[in-house]
Image 1 (tube, rainbow, N blue to C red):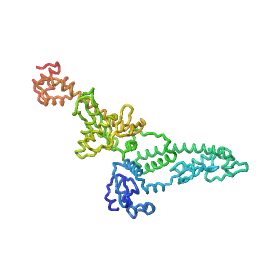
Image 2 (cartoon, rainbow, N blue to C red):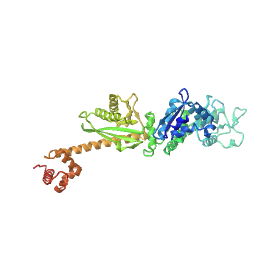
Image 3 (cartoon, rainbow, N blue to C red):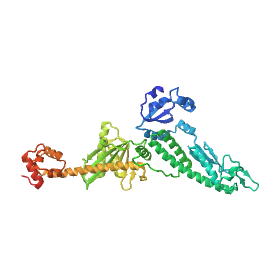
Image 4 (spheres, one colour):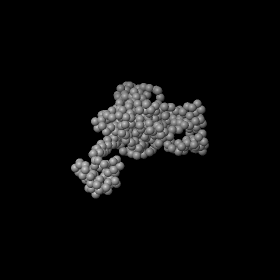
Length: 486
């Protein structure tokens, strides 16, 4: 295993440890795969010797496979997905070892108490948490005792002759709300209010955990971000799957890694889509039909990779055929060159355009990358398969990233369309001037840049263009001013 580990790449990624039967027993992420995996097989490593479970796991490892990622954000996302897929034994054990605190309320008892514990059991009690900050939780319970007059773990209530209970027999009896002597029914109402408060506090803490997770990820502290993610997921499951929690979305320019992770999650991709290509079709009443493709790399425009297309297969207005043509041309070329496809293809349009793009891959008999459409009308995400439409909060960072890609593709297509129309206007006028061949025409357009500048130029300025003598320059000047040939 040491030799295998030393041969791993020094890049970020995820590693899977397998036993002799090929079962995945542990999934981990690493900033440096070689350095991280090698550390498990160095006998001098103190943390290995000090933790029996890790030592036991290492003894079972017979195979290691890795998945390289482009950055730690991808590794974080991929690790979580693989853990959910394989449910490795040792990932579960190590998570349990963290033993975050829970609040246990033994509602089956006549006078329920609020206790701290580290393991949830099927004992009829209610559990809240887990909570990572023990000090904060203990302070909260202390405040709850004062606010609601409830019993904590160390209380020893005394049952009075009349059936009521005396909660405390020391100084604490004077520092909390409600009477120290109370009935079972009255105390039950206190417990109900305290549980509602704790549930609300748990919701608040969950939102804070998620915000802190995003901040940690933005600060590139991915280890802590992963821990917070695990805590938040566990807390959400404990509170209940039906509850929703508010969150503050980061601004679009704060951290593109968060946008990519979020996009990968909502689209259920294997990892965050570091490479995205977006297509748009532009035309004017069926004429000057063109298309654009823009590429975003790590959430940023990669303008050197932008491409634009003239439609060759037909004339007229048919967005579906146009989309099929340009997608086929783009990825047919990449396929022939052996170049990797992007991890996500975004189509500016609805289900018709998306299916046209998919058809291009089917006709080439090539496995397509993930394809989605972004319909402008309601900013709806559409899929080429049986999945229904997806509408995101307009503040969602994933939607913002898709909008930026779509808007950039739209801008680039429209600019190409405008350039073609302008060029056609220039060329149509010069077509009427006799004696002007292709070489001289291109020389004119290159020198002046626009028809307007050409019209404003004098004879001497036109003579500076290669291929134009005094007579030809004089004729062209007269033509541009009056429209007359001579």
